[in-house]
Length: 403
Image 1: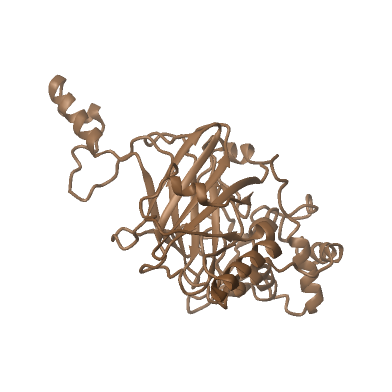
Image 2: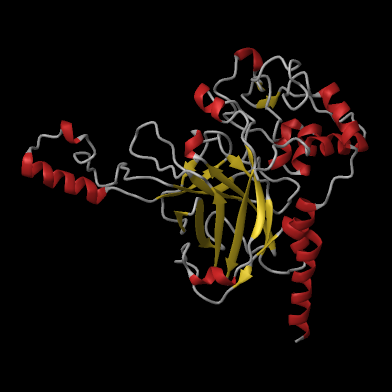
C-alpha cells in the first residue's frame, strides 16, 4: 500500500509542477496493439495541450507554397497517451478547416501527422535536431498521410498493373479485369516508419522489424490520428527510463505542406513510469531559462543578425539562404539545443541542409578528409549569463498561436 501511495503522489507532483508541459501516460491492462481512433480505451485517457510552430528554418523552392505560408500561425493540438507492459499508443487531435487527401501523383498535397522519437535520449541535453535528426543523433519517425489509392512496387515483380490504363493492351472486358486488379493492389493507408539523421536522409524501415499501426479520421473540421507501437524493438527502447522525449508534426495539404514545410512541436516529455530517473528528462526539457530577454535581443542583433533572419532583422540579413532562419526557433528547439548551437555549432550537423543554398552561402565547409565543419564560429567567448540571456531571447522567437 505504501508503494502505491508513493507512486500516486509522484504522478500528482509531476502534473502539478509542470502543468501542461508534460504528458502523463494512462496505464492500461488491455491490449493496445490494435487500438484506433474509435477505441473505447481513449475514454480513460487525459488529453494535454501542445503547440506546433511553423518550421521556417529553410525556405522552400516553391513560390506558391511560400506565399501561402508567409504568415501561418502556430496551432494547438491535444495529445493523449496510453501504455501497458508492452505497447504505447498516442492519440493526436488538431483543428483543420479543410480535408486534404492526396490523390495519385498529381500536385495535390495531403494532411498528415508524424510522431518522432530520438533513438538515444540517455542525455536529454543532447537530443537530435528537431524535425529530421542529425549526424550521430538518429530519430525514428512514424508518418501517417491522408491519401487516395496509391501504388508502388509491391515486391512481386508486378509492373504490368502499375502502368496507366491508357497504356495497357486491353479493351472492354479485359480492361475491366485490369482495372479490378489494379484496384485490388492499391493501398489506401499511407503509414510508414523511417530512421532519419538529417534533411533528405530518411530511410524507410521495410524489413518488418518495426511493428506499428497508425490511422487518421476526419470529422467536424478536426483530424484525429493514432499511433501504437511496442515500447521496445530493434530501433527504440522506451523502457530504459520512466520518461522519454517525443516530438509531433502536422501537415496541412491546403497550404501545400509537405516534407519540411509543416508545423512542429518541441521535444515533449512523456511520463510512463515514476522511476527514480523520470525527472531527468522532465526537468531538462521544462526548466525555465534564467535570462534577460532584452539583453539577449541586444546580443542577437550584435552577433546573429548578420547571417540569421528573425524578427527585427528585416533589411539587415543579406540573404534568406545565408543561414538557418530563426523566426520560429523558440517554438521547436529546446533550451539545451540552443545553448549547444551557440557554444559549439559543430556538435549537431544536419546533412542535406538546403538544396536552394547559393555556393557563396554554404552552411558547412569540408576539410581535406571530407569531414564537414560548420561555417558558424563558436561563441564560447560569451559569459555564461550572456548565453542564458541570448537563449531566453531566442525562445521568444515563435509565431502567434491560432485561436
